[in-house]
Image 1 (tube, rainbow, N blue to C red):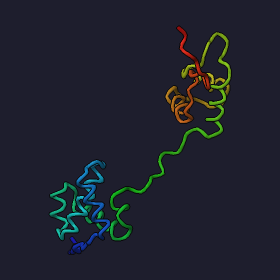
Image 2 (cartoon, rainbow, N blue to C red):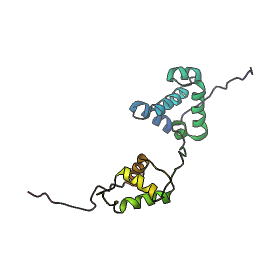
Image 3 (cartoon, rainbow, N blue to C red):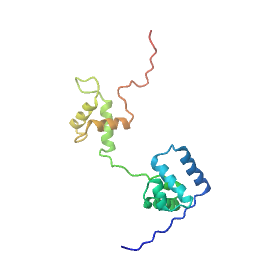
Image 4 (spheres, helix red, strand yellow):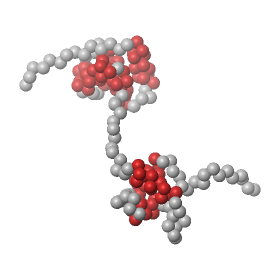
Length: 161
């Protein structure tokens, strides 16, 4: 085993950062993850070492040191919040999604009064827009476009008595 000595992290919050951290801790309206990170920064600011901080907050000493290093190198926002992540790549292209929306805007097949999510999925495959697609994916596409085909657009009706 190597004899690595851990360097004690010395952290001093700036005045505005200290105020923001203490406000977050008083309010307690942020997520648990953010509150724990704020607690870590607050305890480092008080001169407490990472092993004690880890026991008090419920994180590992490495996590406490990483939060402090993020504050030192990139500031308060980076210490409290994660970087934006790229997310999962879309399975269907914008062209395919737009063709499905165009399909919804068209008249339903003979024998049907309106489009259902299941019917849209079947028709998208039949028209070779996509190889296969599920009902939930159709629903998400419609939701992403804030598309509500069952609503009448720009219709104002008075109450008839």
